[in-house]
Image 1 (cartoon, one colour):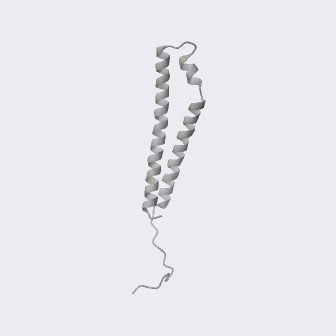
Image 2 (cartoon, one colour; image 1 turned 90 degrees about the vertical axis):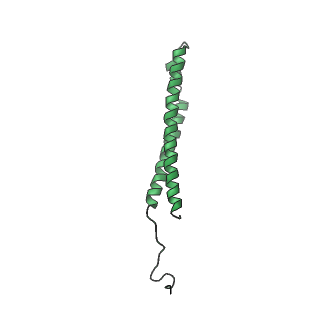
Length: 99
C-alpha cells in the first residue's frame, strides 16, 4: 500500500549535479563569446597587412602574413571548439538529469 500523495511532503528525488551542468554551459558560452570577439577584433584590425607587406610586396612578406593569419585563426578555432565541447557536455548532463 502506497502512502497518499504528498504524505508527509514527499518531493521527487532531486538529482545532484545540475549546478555543475549549468556551470559547464556558462563556461562554454563564455569561451564561444571570447572566440567571436577575438575574431571580430582581428577582422576589424588591418595592421598586419601594413606590417607584413609594407610598401613592397614580396614572397617572404606574403608567407609571413599567411603564417600570421593561420596561427591566429587556428587559435580562435581551438577556443571555439573547446567552448562548444564544454557546452555540449553541460547540456548533455543537464538534459540527462531529466530537466
